[in-house]
Length: 107
Image (cartoon, rainbow, N blue to C red; front, side, top):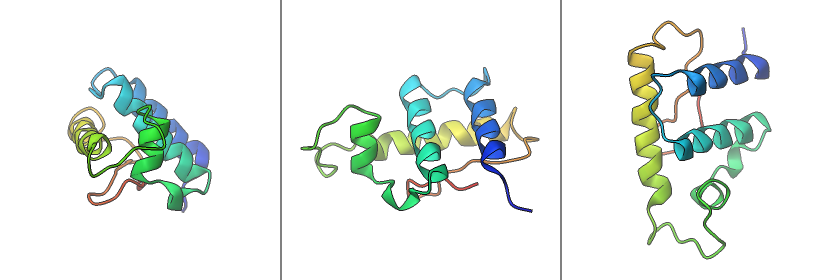
C-alpha cells in the first residue's frame, strides 16, 4: 500500500513538532523544503544550489565548492532525524530519511 501525501505531511508535522526533535529552525526549514519539493513532483530539482538559495538565503552566486552550508546542514539534519527515530519516533508509522550522498527525502 502506497503512502498518500497526507500521510507524509502528517509524519513531517509529527517530526517537526516533537519536543525531542533537536533540529535548528534552519534545518527544520531544510526538511520542510525538500519534502515539499518531493511531494510536488520536483524531486529531480532538489539540488544543493536550490536548497542554499531557498533555505539558507544564498544568492545565484552560491558555489557549493566554496560554501559547504548545504552539505554540513544535511549531515546534521540526518543526525537529528536519526536521533528522533532512535528514541521517541521509533514507533512512528512512517520514517522520513535523507539517504547519504543525496538530498532527496525517502519515505
